Image (cartoon, rainbow, N blue to C red; front, top):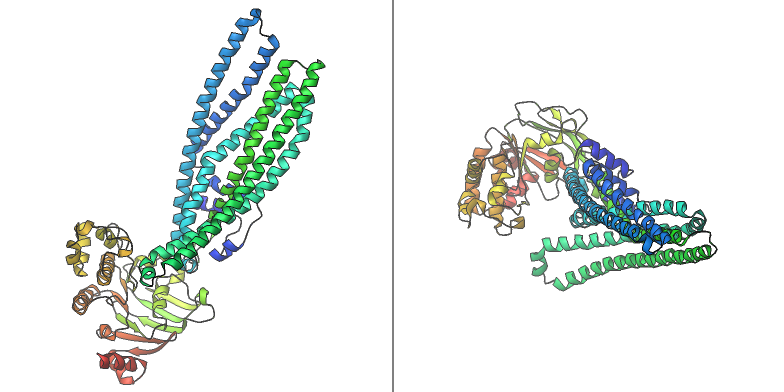
Length: 608
């Protein structure tokens, strides 16, 4: 999504929201204003818009021409002398109906295509925006709710843009056209109509606002149910292992029932609104017809003119009655659009600077922390890093060890610029990360995380995720270095085998080797290994360690490890405890100091 479009969306959505909780907690004043956020997407297709409007106007004009022909037939009578004239009028009406049919079908086609195209662009824009948000947003957001916004909310908008808005525009044009012709036909009878309009419109507006609030509540409830379902489906093996199927079903059923109750209330409001408006509209028509009958008997107007007026009144009343139903659907779409606008208005915490400092070429992989302090926003009471400083030279292999919760993984998160430090500075090749383009920083980094992510794609595509433009030969070479080639070739379709969502068809060690192959393929100057061999058996670990030794040549490597046997070959070891860097040195020097590292080493090596 381009910058201009993004800015338009932010303007339409009013103020940006800082996080998901804030956005869901605030409720704006009920209106259709959120639908204006769709304008940037609609403006991309002026041809479709003009064609739809043209067909809409043509259909409305054809409809409004029918009562004129009816009046002339009635006023000229049905005598034998006027038979030829009546035949002409009927022929004209057939032609008008043909134009109406063609124009209506074209309107449906153009508007439906426009709605599908707008919603496709909207879904792509929302997903693109989600990929740009900082990890801090996803620390609190529910993935199931985000998926619901991508699917259920956009489907609701598609129904409105592709159908409801078109019908609403047709009825608005028909209503004003018919009202104008009513005034032309009989100003006196039109005066009675003007008195009736406020009685009809005020309930329409008032109930429409309530429908929109209830529709928003129904969509929120559905999103909560979807989020809960997504979480459970992602942990189905854990769920079944603890035999908690009944508990999960009960909770999900309760969430679905809440969504149903909200939707039922919204539907009840819409049904009540429809009944009220239709009663008021057609009661007004009956009253005006009675007054018109008195005028015909008093010879103030002709019977044909009364028939013309009544037809226009029916058109106007029918248009207004249909608007009462469409209003509820558009209000629902407005609620969905509001939720998406809130999402699109969230600003990423980590942004590319207006004038980023270019990282030097060739890359060296030099890293430095200077008095870095950091606290996660979700845990503001506890400081994760406290005054951490170290310098890693290009090509150096450094291990970071310490007890769980010492802040080791946070160092990696800051190096990848998933977060910015609370204070202090971090540099890569002499450039402060805050001054560089985050994407450029991450391109120079390869990560093998402790919790490996494997996608529902082929084995080759999972490895190629490290470098999408890599050739098949490059992918195979990376797999060989990571000792993944043998088990991949043994799969039913080799490298083209689909390995299942989250890699459920692979063992933990196989998933780990896929991740290592992905990092090898990336060929980045800075390599981050977070327990990269933790899921391997002893034999595979030895072989992968040898592959990693070759991989780390000429690259700066940071290794997080709990198993100290994997860091003995490192140039240096940084020991962290409670967010502080407490020791630094080689394995031998740290053991000799008798500090924290020595105690950890004694526990592990003596146990072994």
